Length: 485
Ligand SMILES: Cc1cc2nc3c(=O)[nH]c(=O)nc-3n(C[C@H](O)[C@H](O)[C@H](O)COP(=O)(O)OP(=O)(O)OC[C@H]3O[C@@H](n4cnc5c(N)ncnc54)[C@H](O)[C@@H]3O)c2cc1C
Ligand code: SF4
Image (tube, rainbow, N blue to C red):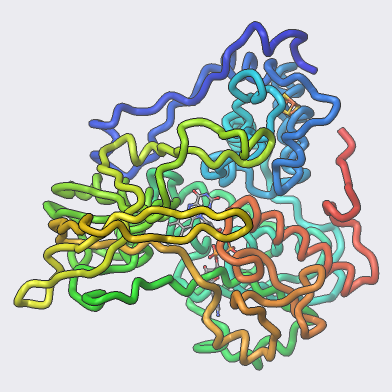
């Protein structure tokens, strides 16, 4: 434990933010690094709990009190070693994770929790600055070949672990650049893409081969995968949920991911203009209140939309935890992201009934109705429309941020894999119904989080290694491995 009574002496601190007016002028990240003194104090708030609930909150099982202690004692390289022992890419989670560890932090019972995610980010950033993060290729190769399909966080984590075990790893990606939703979904203002490139060059140096513009099952036949001893499918959950109501085929009713991808490509220089799908001077309505919706709000404000409104069908959450949702469970409370702070009108308990178009077939307004959720003991809440609450909203661009419903069936069918009713690949310890094919990330568990994708990629790699070699030395939550520090 870094500092006895540190949790009494110091308060929670967070990263500073560039003021809204300035940051919406560009797509850069806008967080400000706290001083080393502040980071030390923050890590000194950790109580090194006998039962560190932060561990169980984290899908990776990050060794949080251990790295907090190292930071407090100015042992940053040791902190980095501890962090990397459970997390291949702390620079992604340190920026993008909703931090279930903080929601589970014991300090959170009486005080704001330790700023674990911020500490994680600055440990890994320090590692890059100091040159401590270097390629670490395996000393020996096993002669086994593995193909990883999909290069999001699940595919990248699986690839790095399998390469570390000495297998030769080829990653196939249908997009023109590596990274999955990290590159094409998440806007640069949340994570600049040089953060992915910096890590990729290390993975390449370690010996992993990346093949882009190769869509397995389409322009790259599944027969080509026969040369591999094992295959790990990490293709994500890519089918976008639709809103099948009147007018949904009008011009100006678009999928959020199409909007975000185009802007990300323009920032990356892969595309010249967002012109076909731009929010400038438009009344934008974002339908759906999750991460994707929030990213559309931040992007619309940067594109200088005339107005930005967000519809959420669920009722407005409480500002704080309720008695039915106690610590250490994930708090279902009102979330206000930095994108919300940049300007948004939010509506809850609202259902879109119809998109109304003009004479050119372009959306001009949305018809909505207010709803209430009727709860009955032992039953799922029922949606009830409130009569007389119909309203028209002017709208030039409607963005559907309604989530994803699994992976396209094509590849899964060609490989003859069993799926469940939620369109997820059925696995047993990440192994599919075909013995040498494994799966991880959103493609297996359904749309989720980066931290889960990394965790699943690591665990799937462990299972593949065991399948190929009969045993595995890779770290895994299954064995409850802890690194030696
Ligand atoms: C807009 C948006 C914002 C988000 N923000 C956050 C956030 O802030 N924090 C967070 O934790 N999570 C966030 N998420 C969720 C997170 O991005 C995903 O859970 C995570 O990326 C899933 O990782 P994955 O590797 O399983 O899949 P993906 O990242 O989806 O990667 C799958 C890859 O497989 C490729 N692929 C698919 N089929 C084939 C094929 N046949 N051949 C070759 N390649 C193929 C795809 O092109 C893609 O690159 C967000 C999601 C979205 C959409
Ligand atoms: S639960 Fe919070 S205070 Fe306890 S060990 Fe984890 S980070 Fe430290």
